Image: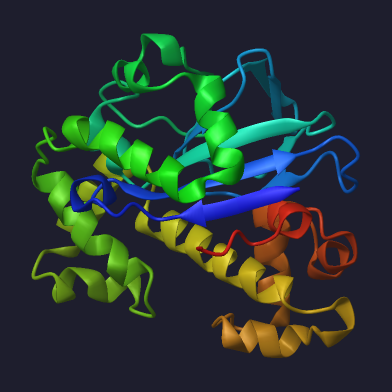
Length: 279
């Protein structure tokens, strides 16, 4: 199994793209074939071989297809089918970026996986999918630089409106310990204004997005601990839950498992594939 993650070096690209990542599951790789993808406020463009099937499910909702596809921001945990070997190159867009790029229509799309014909996408003229995936297997820096070079002319033409600009200012505060109720004051805007702009660009509330960010922090923290090392009351305090029952309810709602069940199963993507630390 191979994986890596790199951030763009071109500032015009980094304005809209958080990182590039690569994952390869080879023949003979063991581990969970049905990993769970936790809720995420960001959209990912997944580049894979055209004949590779994809499968995402949440309760009775199943989304399937073949080849490259979008995973839009999603509030639910998706179960994936990774039974067969694959090479996968991902482009993670920043939260709210698709509103500016208008890639999913006039409004961002939530809780959806959608195929994309890369051979009809303007930037694909700079590479062949199979060649790009082969490069990504062994030449990650070259792959990053190629994606930067390919995306920069397109992204440099984007013009943000006031809602996008305000969302970009809000995001660092959501990633911090600042209370949601204080963000408007910090940005010298009314709370109603920031709520409306953020919802317009992401279709998520500030509370929903902050909850997803906190979940990612918790999962990254738990990933470094063995089951016997986890102290749930201390974890509840560390991540500012009112008490341990509050943490239990939160995890049950977010990933469909109680803390003890999750600690025993470790079936999320971070557990199966690692935490993709930046190279």
